[in-house]
Length: 314
Image 1 (tube, one colour):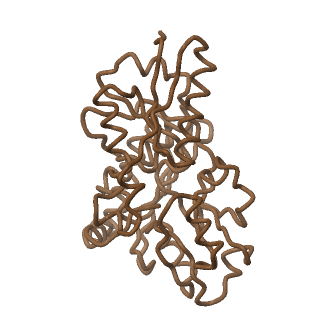
Image 2 (cartoon, one colour; image 1 turned 90 degrees about the horizontal axis):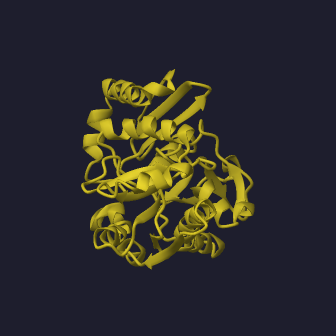
């Protein structure tokens, strides 16, 4: 099945455009006779840089305009970083397709230091992710963690101006922008467990557009999808969002899926961890198992205490 034309809604930031253009290129290669265009939109999340996102609506500010374009027919699909998307998509939207994951690790970026361990006591590290902050504070308690807002280029400019000794960004985002050379150290998943879905792209459509999943199916990566289902199940079961320090990472080896997750206090003094392994066909159940383990350890109380005080991942 094919259509004569598809329009992809995207934010106008450099990284968002790379992601949308990647999907555009893939679709044009699959369907040479199809016209695939981009609808570039500015979102409130891109425009509000002087306030905490948790105070003005969270990450939903980055997708609302794109979803409006789907609703009014200006666009057929929207491309997102999967880690930024809600685990329970509101009606009438759905994530129809998950593409192959790039490097899911966090990246240490600095102009003067090679590794996190090289940073001197009191050095300022920038991140707006409570997930990253909690793990940083747990392992490197002498460092000073400060908020870091803006797109990738803005964050790098703040580093280059001397506001930070180092910053932590997603490795995939840097690589996609041709900035992989800025990475000094790729943090292992043991040191900085990624966010659910980190490194993967998701395609959002209206549920009623039943013809689109078939068209988009060749873009789907079944391995990444299985991992994402398990990871996102943890977040869903814990009522987690981008506003809590929650991490989940799954790895597929043959038909066996290994999943690990954590919930932490922002200061890193309390971290609950859980892991499980099982068949990839039981990815959802595996995610629920790990989530229930975290809850049994006391994660529910911790999450409740953080509900109104946390900062979304950048």
